[in-house]
Length: 242
Image 1 (cartoon, helix red, strand yellow):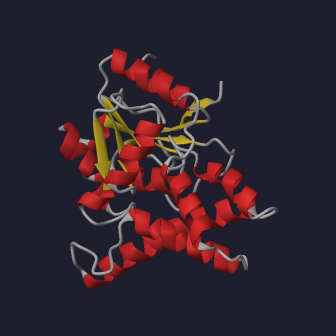
Image 2: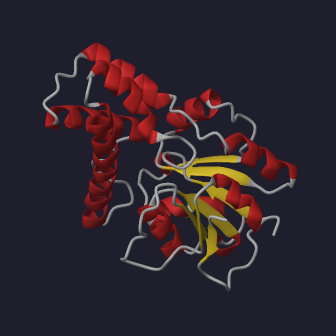
């Protein structure tokens, strides 16, 4: 059983929110197309693209925090950040990203491959009446296309976007969208993410957290452990059907 409880005092959650990119949708699946377009560079493009995408969101958070403003003066929607990160990644790797290749890669990112267990887990949660949702950096248009292309339409009660507050995780205003939408305190909500930094930010905020550690990585040493650790999304169901 690849599932562990790291905090014994947690109570059963009353709702669950999922991160989207990396958790429900495989951000590295773009590497297949990238390999076709740039032979021998597919994996490097996918990895650097993702790393730079997250780095740029953190830079945008910093610009807001430094100015003490609610809305970042340099805010960009996640789609624009994703494009900036792709362009940087190809430049860093010395690749000539022509307009056609850029369009194809961005369209692929719009409809990323979903992890195979997603639909069954969401259907099971729906059957038991557990409120569900996505809480993501993705802007609404990106998320709606991703959900539809993955066949998950109708299986999520809420699709919450950081674009609403023009901020990015791990800013508290993004996590606050969850309690506001669900009408529950943070400690009654389970937040699931495959990104260690996101699980840490959500734990700091006050959610019960499940870190979906598909890659067998060490957790962040900066702060508290997540409430739960698992390797497969199916393990979420154990928290609602112990």
